[in-house]
Length: 349
Image 1 (tube, rainbow, N blue to C red):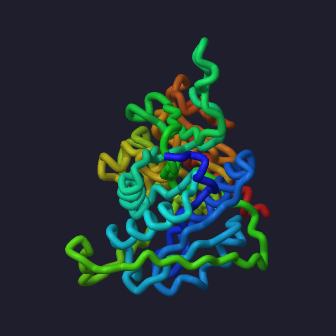
Image 2 (spheres, rainbow, N blue to C red):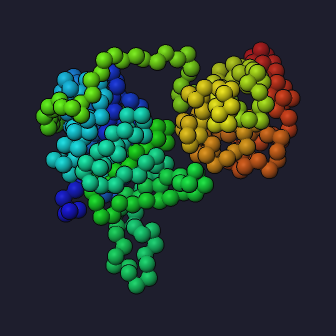
Image 3 (cartoon, one colour):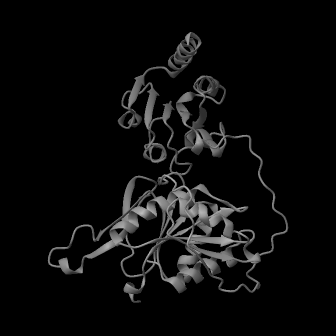
């Protein structure tokens, strides 16, 4: 493999029902950062049916070029035709880096494509940067250190350690990234996409599944990733009924209730409300961690919040290490008192 042939940072721009998923814009923001030290461009890969009209929005969020793979066989996501499309783009255009969102679709598509193009893939990355590999040159082997590598960092061993991984001998360097981890750029209003159309040809065969019916889940739950204020509860709340005091606080603040994994595992709250490594990554303006000890798996999903307020009876709880404000005491007394104080203050205004 001639590594010098591979240039550019490519982003799989996921769309569902002809609507670009937010993770695509987040990845384009990170791609712009990665492309700068490499002195290269950012390309979005848009796959679907009748999706060409979505290309301009990708240009607004940082795509220098948009490769559109448009075919009726791509109307709904199916592993085989989508993998064929993205692998075809990689084989023709030879990108140096390919980023995919770690969504339900991306977690299926990314590994399938990486196997087809014979390269590695690092899953669920939390940090991406360009640097040297090994990170520290081996004494006597300084000339073997490779430069301008994609360094992919992710939690490992259940979140108990952090691993930085590289793919120095194969291209492209591929990573999946969880939604909510990377930042979008400010949109460039009125930007027009430089579109290049590509179609590797699609011939349905025994590997093409047939979609008989699409049933959309209906949920009354607010997406916690969009919330500006989150009131999050852990096992320390005590019971599902006791979440009422958190709901009261959230109502006064105009916020949303979320929770830790322990709460979901106990059956108190649905998975959609879980914050953390195995839940969702959130970046609210204010995050209340109530009765949450602060395990590294939970902190990984909320540590980028603007302001973190922790309430816990254990003064040694790890959550206080990341909190901007901490209150040690009984949440059953503190939270209702805080709610009443806020109500009084708002009433006075």
